[in-house]
Image (cartoon, rainbow, N blue to C red):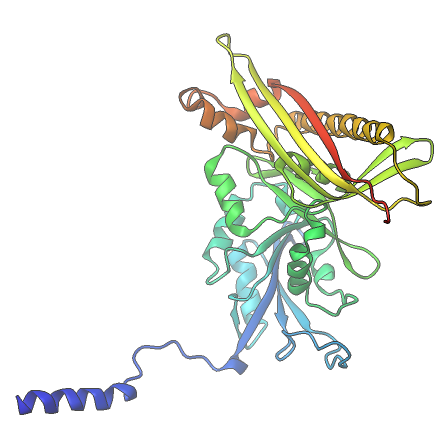
Length: 371
């Protein structure tokens, strides 16, 4: 018994000194990736770039503090016949080992997105430690120049985009898409990708619309207004809408909330229809000059709002059908309602011929009056 107790004491004594098999790397040897981009090189080369954060600049300065960093990230890029070659060149251009665990955004040029992106996504999936909630964006500009912008807030591009999408007032202007959702949509094959488009404006970043895909290729883009309509169909908890009420007259709404019910119907002769019922309500922005809005005026504003949103939804669906793109997820609704029939059809072939019946209701919750 005494020998056993002595053995336990010895084990407890030496345990703190057992380091085990740890992957230890000095911080100065590690380059922290804030963002990654993929583009086409010249000529017919593939290009990859990584924005590495300047050490010590990850956290922005406090209000009133002087920013001590002129630039908070630098970009390293490489080109090659394949993405592996491009990545190898990046590694040879830096003495640091790049860590991707804090990557906040992946930007893909529209030139790359308009090709089959399966190989690209396979490559991204093999990059170690990329967070699944990393934002994915499309750009029509040169990603290297986009990454090099010193924006007004002096934020690295990854930080800027991350903060941008966290703002609840941006949800109807830019619908964020995480990396895991990209893989999920492509794997399910019951809908198509939609990815925000980032652009340069006034020495800053802006979300300029939405790229829509058919299967695994980008086929077109939606304007900001069309993006708002897409948000209404998909359902949003906050947003803005402006309704024309005649010559030089408008009604503006904030806190716009929508909930859409989509009901697929498949007749015996194979005719496919979808009932799209959108219930929307919002708060009217303060009126100038201040005056009371009569019940009759309120009903007319709601009627105009219903007509406008109905037309916008119908126009967007027609556009998406022509592109054979289903970012709304109508196919998923059909699969759930008719699982046996779903296995017998090619959704992208039957989707353009489907009929949609749109109905909207708009309720004005508040009239925006100062009391």
